[in-house]
Image 1 (cartoon, rainbow, N blue to C red):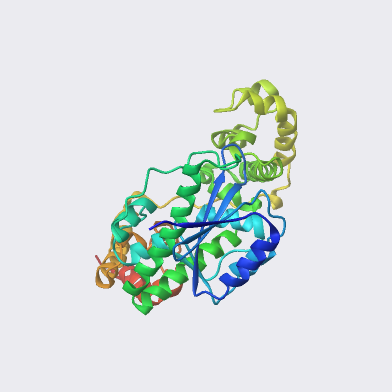
Image 2: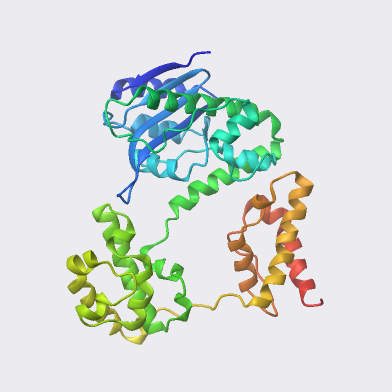
Length: 376
């Protein structure tokens, strides 16, 4: 069966189709983009699938994205995507909006215990019995004209995504369907909750080993690096490499040759920004103590690993009971946050990251497991 391909290359055609799509129960959405040497993804193509028709929107020609923004926010139309975190960035950048409700077929596969973190081709093969040609994902989506292979690849993606939803939806109980949408809403919320540049220093490896005064330097370096990456539209490591942050905060170099000796310091960074960085380090290092961040907590000690294992077992048991891939149940970060809230003797508090159905179904069992950990 051939796929009908419709190109959308002007604002009026996009507006007409978006009006029509808002009458449907769901639409499949996919994006092709380039992100080789930029901070933000550059959209090369937006695909919409419905039935056996694929619509290819050329983002290089569209100026008014408002109709697509309204479709994305229309609660009456489920938006179907696959492993969509980068697609969400593309859509947010183009339209200023994010899809809701969002049904991620990769998550749905986990809820049906078909597989966890399954690639698109494998899922299409598993559920629809269709073998997709090897992808065009690495090709240049900003070139024009696109090759025939690129066009058919993009169209197939959109159409099979719509078919996947039609095949997976009936296999999900109403509860599981609601949970897939809940997780989709959480993906959207995570993107909206983008970490403030002022807090990025807390995620630097081994940051907990630094003193509050050194953390003040690390914090300012991270803020500067993030803002520069965004304003220059280049990857963070092009501005200042990740592995240079910690030693700079630790040793606080005060001249260019000391800066050049920092681990993983790129000569380009010294040429472009060396003098500025020395000034930034000097200013941050001399901040008064009341402006220093608090010392960061140490990581959990090795003896906590047994308790973490017990907590993971709570999720695995519930996953078995519900027929859900165990990896979808409880995130490691959530369990560590729970343990850190009261280690070693309690009392423990459920972290905010344990939300929704997971909190309802497993929250008390996790606290009970921790209460029992002290007795064993």
